[in-house]
Length: 167
Image (tube, rainbow, N blue to C red):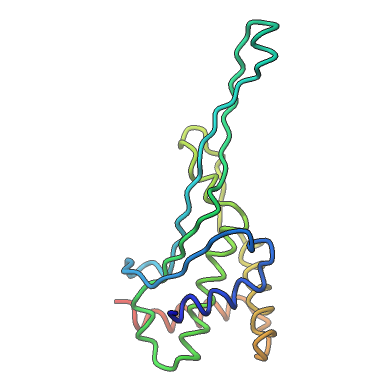
């Protein structure tokens, strides 16, 4: 079993709602501007109101999107070059938590809609980043590591370490 899968299982402990999903984690060749990404499919369903069609003669179609419950999280393979394994574990787990939060918020369903029908949603808000920081501290506490109070310092540290290996 690869280290990403092991660390993904540790990260999933702070996301109990995601137990019903099949999530795979791998190292993959990504752009130097990406630390990680999530791939997940959304299936489109079309349904009609049968009673309204038969009684009133009006076919009211309703489209809905639903997740397939299968996801793949790809982590930039260049992060494998980070020296000490404990440091690499913290950086990769931060990336994994970020992608798991996208799955938890169901951002893949919003982005699966056609652009004209898509609700204009900003994904990386301060609340989103605060939730990631809260989950990161829960994970660190479970591992016996001290909590980090400032979320901005975590992002600066992860970006500084990642920028050394991403070129």
